[in-house]
Length: 187
Image (cartoon, rainbow, N blue to C red; front, side):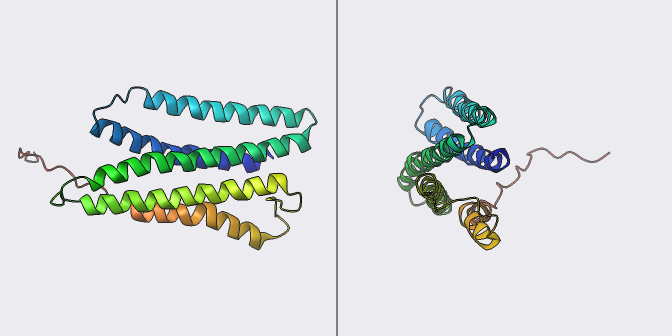
């Protein structure tokens, strides 16, 4: 059970880091304080990991079937929370960018980036939330499909690999390097 949960936790932490980044941009643009955002991110992630370790300890105490059900419900809840985070801060950032003047350079590109990434990530986490919740409440729908590698491949392709590839493709452009005003000859 531990091997299957850790990649999901890391996936959650990675994508909530993007939500934190967007929250910081939004708060700075609105002149709102950002001092509580990073501690909130850290507290939420530490809490998620502590709860998961508690589930692992509970499973190690011999209550694996109950712990497995609790772990599935827990993963469903944190996936839903991640989706809500993307909707809230991705949506706020999207609508804030829409209000910038049309002449703003890069406005349309940033608007598209935020909109697409928000939609992709929210969809990805909602699908994960639904599938994991279904597997928690329906005994016939198990996510541990090691006997069916094609189903395993499809599930992870839909909820992790394709969304990650799309996000990387959309956010592939790095900001241009700053050109220094001073000339520094090589000696």
